[in-house]
Amino acid sequence: MLVFVQVLRAVAATMVVWHHARHETGLLAARGAGAALAPETLLPWWAGVDLFFVISGLVIVLASRSLAGAPGGRGRFLAHRIARVVPLYWLTTALYLALALAAPGLLGEAGALGRDPAFVAASFLFWPMARPDGSLQPLYGLGWTLNYEMAFYALFALGLGFGLRGAVAWLVGVLVALVALGSLLAPPPPLAFWADPIVLEFALGAGLGLARLAGLRLPAGARIALALLGLAGMLGAAWHLGGEGEVPGFARPLLVGLPAGLLVAGAALGPGLGRGGIAALPAPLRALAVLGDASYALYLTHPFALRAGREALLRLGLAPALHPWGAMAAMTGLALLAAVAVHRLVERPLTRRVRGFLENRVGASRRPVFIGREDR
Image (tube, helix red, strand yellow):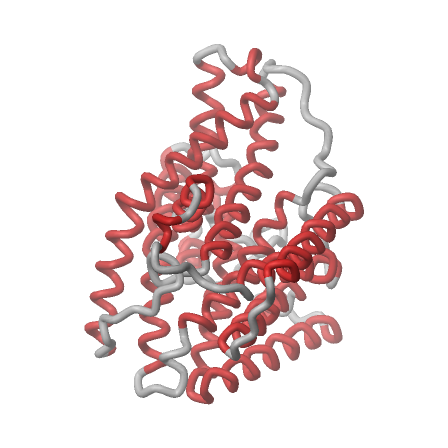
């Protein structure tokens, strides 16, 4: 288990939650809880997504080392990925769709989109489709990142027949070609979506995964230096780009993706856990590792928890006294607790069942490749 990669998962998800919690405090302010916060300039909290993309590239390579070039490797890879990503996303999207249909005014534009069968189908099938305002977001807006993830998995699966190095070379070549095409020709959607330079962050993570499998290990001092450089890059990105996350073109992978890559390199290019496993870790690292396991659930469920927390603070009359930082901490804490519960009670058993079902269909071995506590 690469415990510091798990820690980065927890950090990445919490960054996204904190970014959205700031938005909720703005809504609290609009309803009389106090003044709105100034735009964030300390860290680009939205950059948790970029950390996720780099980590995803790393983990997919590590998890595929026994599948590349193996008979049925593509099928097993896709079975693992579908079981990992699809069930919880479909559940949260279905819940969002139910809310959109039951109370169209509650979710704004989503109320109308929920009545468009083609758009709903595209959202469930990870196909980028434009909204009326031109944005390429699915019904449940957070799913835009998963539209990238699933395209990344499909491309990587195609390359698995070439062996692991060949698969990474294929992946990097296709992603670079897509970005070049998008820069030169301005293709229509969905190609324009997949050609965004942000996809290069997957390639960066895949390269780090290949480096680790090749035996590259760095001493602790070098890894700490990489992490500090990555943090400095994030601070610089916040100062230069601001706090909203709308960063066009190559600015995002250059100013945010590269620092994210440095952080992931510092976490990934060291030794794994010793004999004691996670139980031998200090309590704070154990807690972060547990949260890292639940990071996918946290990413998908936190908007529900944040909004429930916001309404609870208002109805209990606590919002004015806690606003803004206490309210943000309370809403974020609720999101973290809810995510761990959803991970343990819903996501983990559901993933295992779907994975077992799919593996039976593709004739896969039931022996998973472990990255964290589960195949990530």
